[in-house]
Length: 321
Image 1 (cartoon, rainbow, N blue to C red):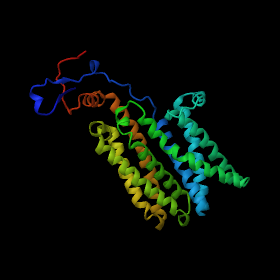
Image 2: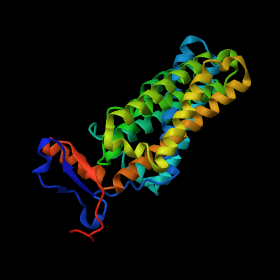
Image 3: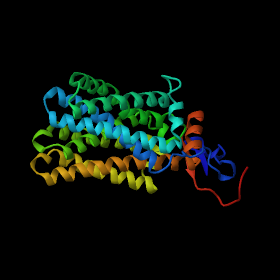
């Protein structure tokens, strides 16, 4: 990989050789495993947004939707914790993350939030199922609505707080992307598990989440430039394009899903599949950007030199130290 400075002085400035050592990646790619981590990212967002929907539905008198959202929030937190432990390899590794609390660490904040959120959602579901301590159960639901937004977005902050070029460069948009995807996911499950007559808030949440996710994804691709290429190429590009199509279709169907069960099912399934594609696509884009040295070297040289660098193809002249 080579690059040269653009501008009027290009003829007099020698080409800058932007090569990594023997063509090896500058960064180690993320070692998160598939499907553990992408599914955890989906379930965590689903649980967080469902808690918010549960609280809003309870306050507005949509009791069937509130119950469905309570159960979804609990199931998402519980299953998500299982996938996270599977990713870590041993359960005690998660417990070790709770030994200290660091507000400057997304991993620490996320671990404590997951622990608190799981307990609150469990209390809310237990009260609803048994009928015991309804006031305490409602209080737990309201409290989970406070931890819910953190659950829905902290994973986006966690990805951005790394050296992986595609993730770090999108640090402004990733929280909004994950929030929108989580809201669309929760709205989709709410539509699928609640009678249509009482699912209007879930349909509204799904449509709003679809708009948020689609907008954030479009901004990422347009703003990032070179570092945004991994979101548009290869397997990651295919997953992100598929996600955008599914989310857009599901969001549009959500606006009319109250008319029939078929439309409700189509919207809910499209949004769910789109949200999963987003998580898998994000992981693939991160790996691709870490493996290709140009996504690390070229932006660094541009920032250091203050000029735009143009990437030109390598000559096949052997390895360079």
